[in-house]
Length: 159
Image (cartoon, rainbow, N blue to C red; front, top):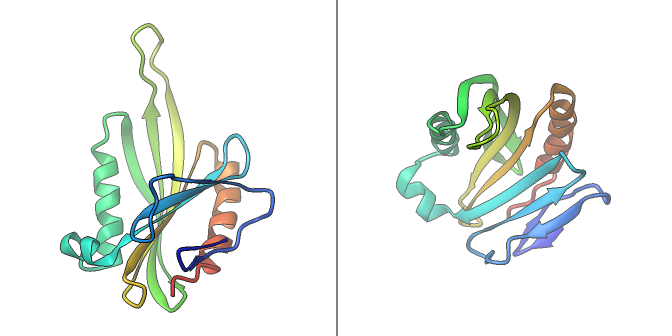
């Protein structure tokens, strides 16, 4: 897929869903693989991100901090943290695991485990930041998703 001078490879089986409000400066696209597996690619203006986050690592750390404060999220743990190189940029990778409580007035509250994978990068050359993100509700799905996410993110051409 090439869109707004962003290029990323994805399996042909994926169904793409572009946010209709997406622009060259900011937007997102979802790659749907099946009922349970999807990967998101988001982008935005780097100058705007730099006002809050001097680095991609700071942006990624704040995303995790904000996730810990979501009402339905409990016991969030960082399972893995690495630094990847994507298209010449340092890109922090986080794998997190947490419990999610279901809500509802008449339904019993349930708890389910969830894992997320996220990669953040800042590209001064294109003037954008990028986030590649996926979420899974089982360890097996999480491993499959990590393989997809790693392949897709390694193919990302941001400039």
